[in-house]
Length: 446
Image (tube, rainbow, N blue to C red; front, side, top):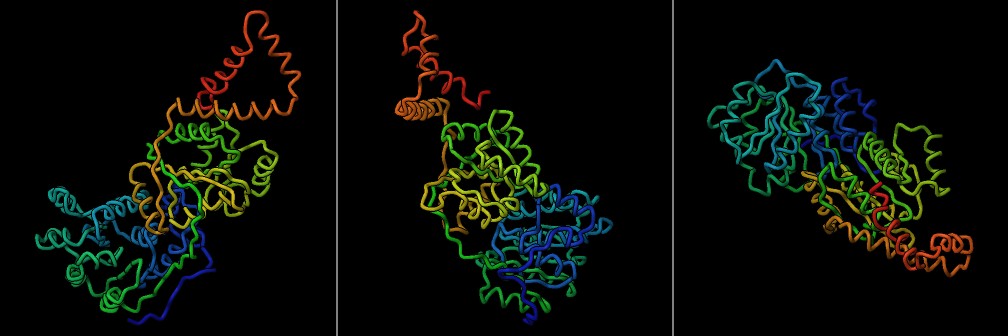
């Protein structure tokens, strides 16, 4: 294998999507997905793949590798051709489904591009019908693709690009012979792309046999030190995230909360929903200019807000000390982002905690994060109303004791005496005030 180009490592310049010069339909789809900037593997791989090069990519799941090969595939697919022009081989049906969903989102504004996942466990008749109608991109597990090749229901004669995704997993699962059989049925002048988390001898042998003059791109992750903080996740429906967030803010009453969202649009949504519920919240994202960012940070420093909502890119430029709670409103796109996010709390020996909201298929991303960072994130159940009430009453009791110790309550004492009059005891007045504060008067019910 001739490897006359190796790209990657620390200190590399991350391009913007504008720098990549993508056509409008792809730019628009990328914007809809809310990506603020390409991940390092995308910055490195996309220009090479668009140039027609064979590429070996060393990258973990969750680093944005699907879009790294998906963008060039979707860009060059020709809706006029009814036979598959691109083939992505995946080790599992779960990954095949995940990849096809992401490619469909990237192809949203490219009319006539049909993407078909082909895997076992799904009725083959449905796949046969789609293939007869015409398909440009096939995402397949090796076993089911071989079934179709035996039936002659798929022809690989028009394939221009083949991607071996998670190639190390496919080899570990014993797909080596299947992969070779499939590759031999594709044109000799195809572009071949191989993505793998590890570079074993088996992978290098496979690349030497089937790739022509490949470029190797690697994303070297920094050695990650996972902060020693309490990490939990909550399984929540997308529509229930704000309610759960409100309950957690009421239950834990953090001095400062930093909430991470994956897109700028999402930041704005969370800010308006929290403000509507009476929370002191502001957002930070890439569309804001320097003076807007400074205004938000000034409010935080003066104590006029206690909740900041940010994207990963926006949070890079800010140093926020004394964060008690980090909330991942969205599971981050990259496992490394997760570590950077939660590292914002528990600094200088202080205790901190992080909560991650997981809905639907995001459970796969959470699994990748735990595997990548070698950590265990415990599941928690959403707090019940009576737990919030009890906790708020406890917090109030602490504050009341502290306030009584100061001895500066003369004006308030007079007001309480006026409320009491001749009808009520001081105990009844105190109980009523507690109920107003910790009961139906919780901020999340406003």
